[in-house]
Length: 202
Image 1 (spheres, rainbow, N blue to C red):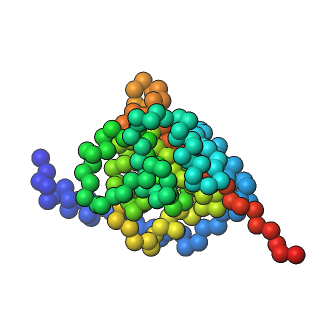
Image 2: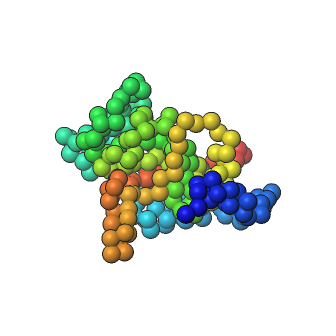
Image 3: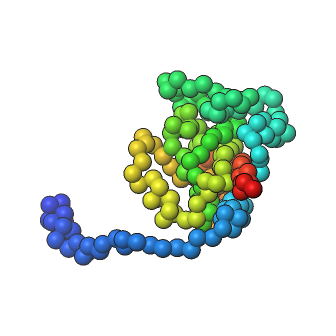
């Protein structure tokens, strides 16, 4: 049997030839309407839902129509009915019974429905994964085309923890049958804040 050192030495001496990353990639730039339409299609495809809103307070109305008064609902978004103040000392197990948690986000990706969110928007980083149902606020003007653009945006950002989340939790390991909510949020609702049309001054 080969020693650990021999194996590691063999790996080190048989590295593939390095390939430079492309310096410039150019993609089509569709209109904002096309980007939004593609994003909505992808969210529906991956098991999420899109609710169009015009102001954050519309979320309170949505919650009153879809959840019970006794449900534990949490959000770090100030000014809303279910706002929760976080000190930074909370233990993850405090949120084990969370029914619905919703958050502001940085941006969304049209090509795969992924949402980029960092811990400063989460309140507690376990929340998007421990809640039964997940809500994400996405401003239409912050929907970008693809992951190439996404990584270009975040490559030089300073953040402690960040993640892309695309749709509710899902798995197809069991008999290749898609199951939603297998090991995380059972549903994901995107609150799409529509852009206000801008008119030229006459």
